[in-house]
Image 1 (tube, rainbow, N blue to C red):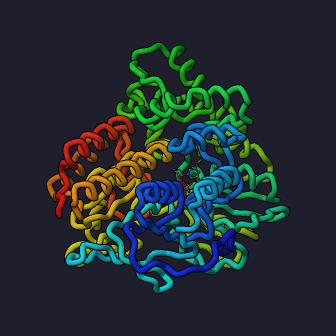
Image 2: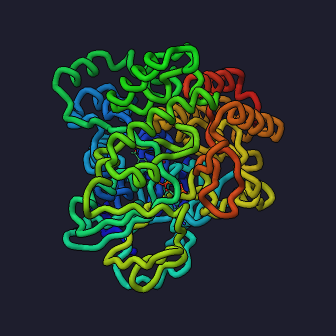
Image 3: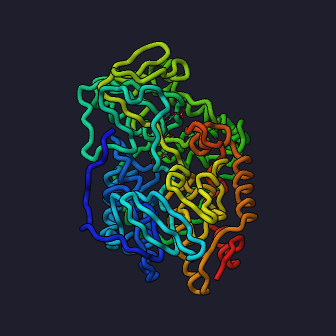
Length: 545
Ligand code: N01
């Protein structure tokens, strides 16, 4: 697996021995945090494993990578000048365009001078006497901080599959989340790809256009909608820029961080014709949210959800010419309970002569061999294997750092039965440690930029409150944390989400506790709760002088 080469680098300089805040990660969360902390006249450094800013958009450079929230909505709202001056090109921008935006933000707000690139944080321990965090990097540097903020992202600890023989393959291998910066030329090559989540669904059509042959190994099919991506028109950009404040407010109050009318009808109370017409409009719109919110009960009622499932199955059968391949591409779990995808020509790709689908439910992979992949019924030979096998989501990036709280308690061990947080922001026993979009917050069920900004604002407000009140520590009480975990579970259990073996549930990592990790109550409701807790003097938190 190739390592990413270097990008822009600041001049080498010494890590300060002490700061107010250490930020781990320089993706969208870490960048906004640095900006806000600076505005508050606090000293801060960020440590970033990559060679540049951008987080997920720095690492996931696979062919076809795009965001599936519209650019004008998937952007920072904290600076009106930034909003007005930045020109997005496409409705769903490519990874290079989003990385360009991240770099623009870093330059515009001069963020790089407080970021240490190529620097992974290995460990962080809370010193109860000094009331500080001692943070250690892979290079042996140590820095003491009053606050530690994990801005490590929900989908940043990538995952290879547990298949025997991974090291045996003699050809090239790539993981979608560690794509070489110089790209990969598949021309004339025989390529095998494992995984059909968002990364697989986006990369398969692009790889298929280059490769001599592409064999897709699918364990679970995805529900995917055509993105209908296009260049943005000057008039729609101008209209959004004229209306940005109202739009941003609507984002904050919405369910997914994307303003959309709240559905009131059940999918079961309308005629088949009306329902089909509604789903057809959602399919034509190229928006996942339009499909997921087409009816009020799609996420909570199996029979209602089945109507969406049947609609998408019909679409797949209309597009894919080979009936057996079409049937293999039809998922059985409820729509939306695994992350649905937005694609460009995904199902159509299976009509190409050089593309072949292997249904691993029928013929599972037995091993990786020196020449390729062997399933229970056939040996396939490849020049290249692509792993689009996803992430140890939501907790992986947090527990891979050796975080020790009160009494030296390890966060990894404290979460051995599943993550436990208050608001998805902090954890009992870990004073002054904050997580941005941690488990127990809307995070991956939302437009990430909206949730990131909300958490950064909340966390920096909490720090300002402590400083203003002459307080030094903030930490959730065990009771508040237990009640929040129960609340998160209660809401998840009222939905169909737990019915799928998804990474939302930790089901893609063998041995990981199966707990629904994000908060499914919606961005607007969640924000209201967070604001009320802050307004009540940080109810549920113990604050100390
Ligand atoms: O990862 P995934 P991803 N043998 O976990 C399969 C965001 N994202 O990188 O489902 C065979 O979804 C696995 O099969 P199964 C988005 O939130 C967004 O694609 O476990 N197969 C699955 O098919 C997304 O959800 C964007 O049965 C194995 C695939 O690998 C999240 O990131 C773009 C296997 C992994 O799919 C993760 O997406 C990209 C094995 N041993 C990503 N192990 C956009 O904004 C795993 N698989 C558009």
